[in-house]
Length: 567
Ligand SMILES: Nc1ncnc2c1ncn2[C@@H]1O[C@H](COP(=O)(O)OP(=O)(O)O)[C@@H](O)[C@H]1O
Ligand SMILES: [Mg+2]
Image (cartoon, rainbow, N blue to C red; front, side, top):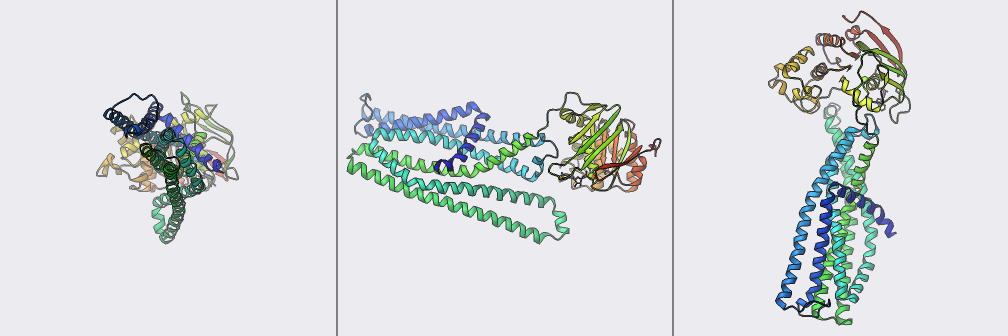
């Protein structure tokens, strides 16, 4: 029962400290050495204390020193122990900071490296919470773990000193403390279980908030504020209940400990003085040892309690990292495939992870290296999924996607994306300047090239902005209209030297005149790249050399319209 309660947490502590050890092995080793040093020095000082106080020497073979020299040695031992403790504290601070940084970096890399569409990426707000908040809590857990290791060295050293001073009294106090302390293990186990609930409630609250704040506009228009308020209050209440239950379990552990310690120390002192008739000097040293042991023991339990509250978080963070790494993409192939003849799909099917039915099936399609292909079909037909496959963003569940006849493997898909320009359906810009948003795709482009691309994308409005290219676009580009965002993304695609250019309903928010300008740029692009235009409007469809019609995940018609490209 006892072992059962401690086992899962202990495994996690070992994993946590192993992780910290891997962060900075030498620093970690230094920390352990400093802990051992300070513990040994303190326990030596304790064993010397009876002689310093004029009592009998507990250790044989001590050289006969005068009281001043003995006092000096005692002070030196205590001073060195304190210095070691200081070193331990400052070193652990550095280690903890490094650990936090490394954990965040690792998680961030794992998330960025995970394959698109995998369930590990399904809850962005939870990933954000993990990288931002939970990784910090894990670093704090390392601090507690290091603290615990220090105590696990200090306590045995103090115990040895106490045993040397008087085995009888030490064993009597120890036995009492052990018997009285046993019930706290059950309480501590309950506190550990409750901390898991607390972690889940906290995460749910963070996810709810993140969703809500990014959807504030529809919430207001839907007049959903009262409902959201109620949902928020309910979440807060659940969190409050979990916190209160945990606090009760914790308070129980503390109160019981206080009682057990008081009983054990008082009983031990009485036993030493009345039954074992120990001399005064030794009794003082023993009392110091007993109090240090008692407070150290209680602090150890307290540290363990705090740590066990954080362990479920660490476990979750590690699971998230593992989930992302499990779907991690390989490094890009050294040379990206080049599209000179055709991009082809052969018997391609795609099933979204967890979806009951395939989104696409039986897709056979060959797109030439130059020209415009319009992809049409009702909403939900699978158009975006098909372009995701073409861009190498996702892998077909069955069948193959090939560039110039070479089937794209996992590493090729990553490299292939370097040859793709993409204007997504749900316009997204980074909260940065317009220039920076364009430079993401073409770092080498100068202002002249950027301005030319913006003009060709009918994004002249940028030049009328007070800050021009330096205008910051707001979170996700929220300070611009949908059509303005689209045109900036189109300009970005024009700046890229790409083999495949995908416009996923990219002109849907543009008026007819602006759309006509953008389509002229698209037609020009088609002379040097394979362009896929997911479109609904006649002007866009009229531009296409080929119209592929998709319905319920299948190609139902392909119409070649040679000579229509000049449209
Ligand atoms: N991440 C996903 N998980 C499960 N199903 C998805 C996912 N994304 C899209 N789908 C489903 O795949 C189908 C095709 O979606 P999509 O390719 O976006 O269609 P379109 O772009 O033609 O409107 C839809 O029925 C949609 O519900
Ligand atoms: Mg779509």
